[in-house]
Image (cartoon, rainbow, N blue to C red):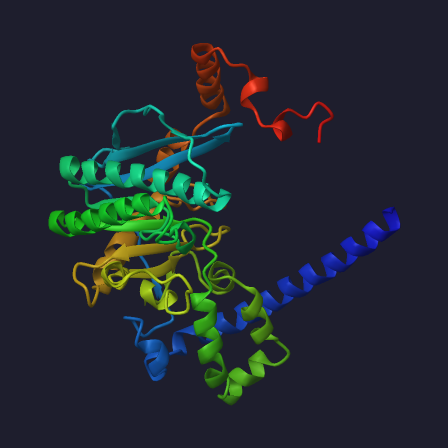
Length: 387
């Protein structure tokens, strides 16, 4: 057993070392040539981007006079014999930056928001229950964001996560969950419209993106770039096609983005073109108004995927994006290994639903109903043999 395990782990170590060596060499080449890459020379790529350089340097700005909001929500799902409980919580943290050091902070609806509890006694598949739980959390976050827009009119609203729903959250049109999905779509549209009306910049901060749009783009342009003899020579022995095929955008960009640098800006809807679960036409037009870039906010952390809602349907001003990134950068450089903006960190900490909170709900349910854990919990949850 030990010998077999060691053999497997040794092989894994070799694979990891191969990936890291290839990434290092690939990054060295890209850092040398990135300023010479003109994306306008690639029409298929240029149609979905707005700036023609591969990377752009962002300078941090003073935060004095700015009002910046972080929004996040928490979700816990508890499964019982005859029902499911969905617990949600959402909060907006409002940072007001004055001339003095350190912001004043407000919270909406309050510093420690109450849990919302939804019991489910419907006969739903596990996929539908997952979708409904996720949609409940999103709806709670969107409602808080709409209220904050109305009351505080911030310069930036930093949304923890994407500005658009994930394809896996879209149920089949015949599903019982579809009504909730329609409600969430209506909230998205309200938010997009109100953000434009209030002239607040709506930003999605995606911490662990699995997107491969940039990696795909690099795979399309690099064969043409390395035709230049000096670049071909630098890239010799680097299996960049293999590397791009196994890497996410964050991994690839981390090899050559410097701290304080962003990638090119591309249209969100270009990622949906190959999806098997495309949005309907009315919401797709909003997806076309969302633009995406990656910013390396901390020296030893992966770049963040950052999404922006444009002021009009067709285009977005890169100067406006860079101005917003200039404010996000000083908010995200508190630690060299963790580059998440402070308002998101604070919202995340307050939106988290703790084990104690969940336990309190279950204890109160038992006290009020007279039921016990044995009668509530599913068989697999109370296995006395530890299975």
